[in-house]
Image (cartoon, rainbow, N blue to C red; front, side, top):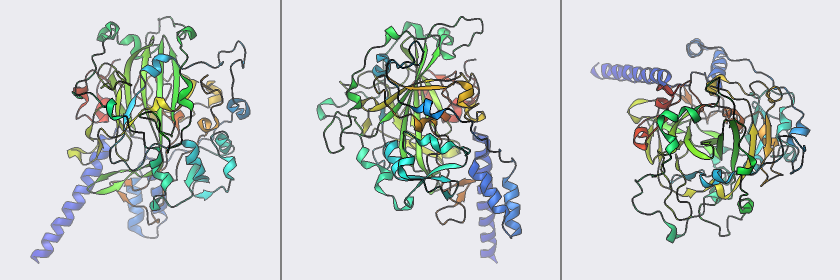
Length: 509
């Protein structure tokens, strides 16, 4: 009897803890958009013949699923064709260079020392995946879904239906999933970081005073302000084209070089404001653990950082992390002290999830007591500027909208007159992949799949991500999500803070 009572109490405590933590996570998570996985799980459970299953599905379902919106089609032949200098003479879409100041302040990324899933090439990723409509193979030839024509999959399908499904069982961990051959080349020993790595940049600028922040923080902030002309082409300097030379992973190269190209997207917001988005792609996202149980794995992983410039001067850096992120004043973030990269901002990529942070260490988020946390350290240093594809993107300013309230395309690209063009340094860079509206990985596995389970309302495997065009590139403020955006003024201010703090604190308005 005594043992039965203890067992009953233990079960009650476990159930109470589970419910309590699940409720706390729901309350703390700033992303109130119900995941598609949860909605479909509810529908799947509701078909069960067991009464308890059906009741559980009703308990989870408090919001109805959004209806799929089909994408209006562009003239894809016109949008995706290669561009060369001289096209559209007199048109604003002629190819432009990447400003030298963007490259001079390009980010450096410390990947985790024990990382197992390294940067990946989107072209190679497509070779190992095949188009699916939800869980159904579309049986399309490999030549019909490359970085040049991936947008053709959109025809007749909604973005929530399209997935790039792994051809191999991901539980077997095929080599391409980890992309270990894309691990950045080490820097020469004589180019190591100087001592005093905890001392951050002394970069100063007389225009960075707090009272002038409104000048660059939010373009078009003052309705009465006259719009300044776009950044003059004369301020651009021709970059060294060596970054486009592909190297075999077995051949020597400069320190920090990875054979997997990063993606640089430049968005001119007007009033002298230029946003430089650096996108980093990985073929696999290893989820985080709670109580030694892992969830959140998915095929394909898009991460990004943003450096905002005002009249060619860097003003802010945004670090993406999960569905949010933190923004810092450019003065605040750590800068490289290496001879070859001195003065450039340093970012840290978390093991598995690849979320971006400003410091090494443990970064708790959502759940209390550090139950859910990313971890970063000073592992291999990746220099994305050594190998990248560069584009200029013209899109509507989204002002203070939350990224989660925008269902891209918002509206369709045709209605917004969105224009993507390669930079002059890579005039034949592929564009079809950019306009692809589906996900870059598998659809989450159903609960009947042995690879799948759910804990705290989160799945072991979740849907692959949408591409860069879903990252709210028209944002008026540096933060991707949240109706407020706080710019942290020191690295110390950001330590120990999760990204939800950055979303919920009162920002500049």
